[in-house]
Length: 401
Image (tube, rainbow, N blue to C red; front, side):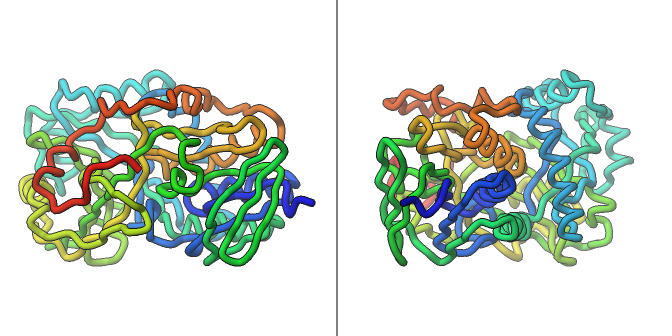
C-alpha cells in the first residue's frame, strides 16, 4: 500500500512549491527534506534573489515570469510579509551589449513596458551608479527582489496546511524506481508512493544517478559591502541591477539589513565535487574582480567586503533547467536551473502539479523538457567566466557530479 500519491524529495526552492500545488489539487503528498525548508545549505540562501522580467536568457521565460509575478504577489497577501518586492530593475551596459539587447527584446516581444536611457539621463536618475556617457540603461519597473529563505519556509508551511505530510531533518538514503511506483529509504523509515517529484537541487544526481540530465554543481559566492550613505540604497531608491563592466558580469540588490549592499558575480566560481561537502570558506584574494567593479561603478560603497556567503547550484549543459518526466508517469524531475531558477519556483510548481495530476500543463514549459538532453551529453560550451577562476582558485578537482 502506498503512503502517498506523490512523494517530493527535497523541499527547497522547487519542491516546496510543487508540494503546495499538488496538495491544493487534492493529492496525498509526502515530502522529505534533509535540513528544513528555508535553509541556506544549497541554492536558496543569501537574503535576497533577483526577480527580472527583462530576461536575456530567453523570451520563452517571459510568460512564465508574468505568471510567477502574480503568484509572488499572492504569497505576499497570504503571509502578510514582503517576500517579493517589485521595486524595479535596471540593466547597464554598452549600446551593443548582447545581454542588454536580449533583455530589451524579451520585453518588447510581449509588449511589456520599459524605458531606455542614455548615459547622461541614467546618471541623473540613478546617482548611486557611476555611468559613462556612452553607456545605456534599460529600466524595467516589473522587476525586483525576493526573500528566498522566507519564501521557501512559507511555501512549505502552505503545503502542510493544505494536507502535505512533511518530514524535515530526514535524509533520503536511496530510491528504488519500479513500473508502478517508488520505494524511498530514509533515515527514519521506508515509504512508498505512486509518483515521485525529484527536486533535490544539487543532490538530484546523487539520489538517482544516471537518470537526471548531466549536470555540474557550481559553488556560488555572494558578497556584501558596507555603504557610506545607506539611505541611498534602500529599496525605494535603489532598483536591482545587472551590469557588465570591464568584462565582468555582475548584479546587485538594495539594502535589506540596514548596513550592507549585496553585490555578486553572475557566474559560479568553481565546481563542487560532492554537495555533501560544500566548502563554505573562500580566501579574500579570490574576490579581486568583484572588488574592482564595485570600486569603479558604485562610489557610495566601501569596496572591502564585510561578509561572504557561499552556496551552490546545479547547472545543465545548456544552462537552462529541466522540468518534466524522467520516468514516464513515475518520476518527475525539477532541477539544473543554473543560477537563475528561484524566481520561477511558484509557476514551475504549478506546471509540475498540472502535468502530474491533469496529464499536461497549460503553461508553456516545453522548452524546459528533459527530453532535450542526450544521456551521453557532456557539452560545456556555455560555461562562461567561472572557468577563468578555476585555474587560480584552490578548488576541488573539476569533475562532473
